[in-house]
Amino acid sequence: MDKIYYKMIDELQKMDVDCDYIQGWAGGYLGNPKREEQRLTDAYNAGYEDGQSKNTNNAGSWKREG
Image 1 (cartoon, rainbow, N blue to C red):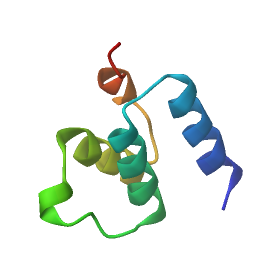
Image 2 (cartoon, helix red, strand yellow):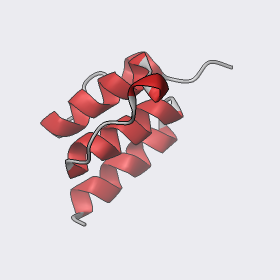
Image 3 (cartoon, rainbow, N blue to C red):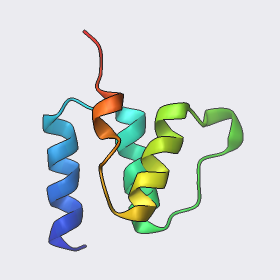
Image 4 (tube, one colour):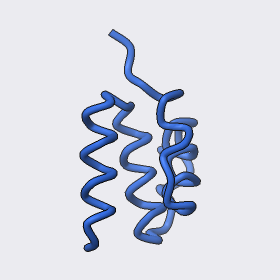
């Protein structure tokens, strides 16, 4: 793993971003296949796309509530 991966995951956790977004981001960053269709969420898909692009531009939209 590279340092950027760990830095970004840490940043997302500190931002209190939705867990599905973080899991999607990690999967997209690493080039893993997406989850099976019945487990996909909007947060996961957004995270996956951002991970593929290696950015967190949309993470602020996926902060957990409460």
